[in-house]
Structure formats: structure tokens, C-alpha cells
Image (cartoon, rainbow, N blue to C red; front, side, top):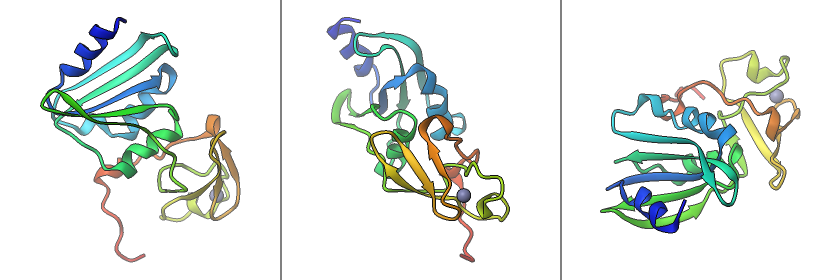
Length: 166
Ligand code: ZN
């Protein structure tokens, strides 16, 4: 893709969020993570686009939605090099990479079937122990989960009402 065309593709969005440099094999996981199916505005999803940097990549353009930093940073779990562009009036007003948070609350499932978080109605809780290689440790059973083993919780957490009795 030429530079001009790339800028045009981003500029096509008047207001919203563009998530770029998503590895193709992580694209639909990011779609799930952001609960894009529940949005009512227009969303453009590019899959297997040519990328000089990555070979093939995915891109998601979401009109009229901006996400809190904490939500966007969850993307780092599955697409550590994703780049966030915030668009206002066709201009990129913000551009930054995602950053993996230190702790992940109710985002990842624990892979240990005996873990209390898989057997009680409760939130999962992971600590990031290796940021570069994406290794997580369960707060409850200390089970380690690496990037390739990550299973995202299927709850659409963006609309989740947190229990008040915690
Ligand atoms: Zn666990």
C-alpha cells in the first residue's frame, strides 16, 4: 500500500478509533475483545491486508467510538504491536501503541480447571510476569498462561454490570 493510500484509508473515518497493525491471526480475537458485534455504528474490518512491516495484517476502523486507555491496552494481550489512532474531524489526533497492563481483571480465563476462578462466580485475576513474552500468572492458583494459551473470557465485559457484593 502506498503512503498516500494509507493516509486516505485512515482519513475516510470522520471520528472514531482505528486499530492498526493487528496480526491477521489475532484480528478476530480483537473484534471479540472489543465486543464489536454489539456496536450500532459503522465498523470496517480489514483482514489479510498487505503490510510492508508484517506481511499480512488486520485493521479495524470504528466510527464514533473512543475507548478508554484501559480497554485498548487489553489488546496488547493478543496483538502487542497494535497501534491505536484516534480520529477527530478526519485528523489523527492521537497515535500510540497498546501497552500491556500489570494486572488483568476478568479478561483471561485460567487454564487450570481446578482453579477457584473456574468454579466460583467470580472475576479472574492475572498478573503479568513477563511483559516481552506475554506470560501471565493466575492470582489464585499461580498457574502460568503464555500468549499462545490465552483464552479470553467470552463475557462482553464492556457491558458487564459488576456484582456489587464483592
Ligand atoms: Zn487459576
